[in-house]
Length: 164
Image (cartoon, rainbow, N blue to C red; front, side, top):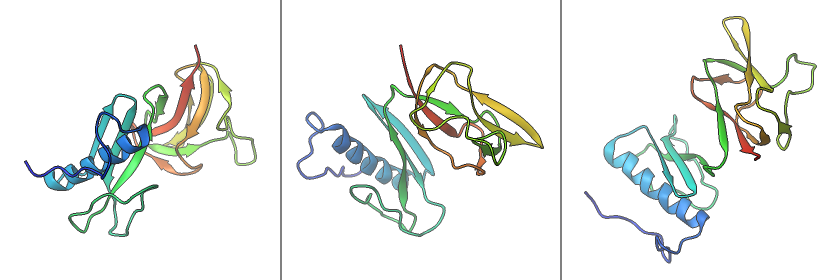
């Protein structure tokens, strides 16, 4: 194929999780451009990296270092998460709401303990309010969507750290 780029001082066998994620992100960004893909996701050991092209030509900074750019389209990191976390995804297209009404408290906050089957949010689709429930018992590690934003089918909404 082509030459592989390696970050200075990073070897595959001894790289920390952050360094491995950064190196994997760089490789995926290069592959994305080389193959003309719009998105790619890879899980390796305890690191999951998803890279996709930005919709605009505006620069998208990475937390520690920018990804290599070969064309005008800039790859960006969608997420890097532990595979131990359970992802709750949108089962439909609609509008994401964290609470049952604009004046009510959200169903859950980051750090809250949840039970399997507990309502996490609502997705409004075609004027119907659909309650989205937790797949597992655990603790909300991350809420990935802002209240009132549109969501797509299969889009990650929550990351839950399951408890035994």
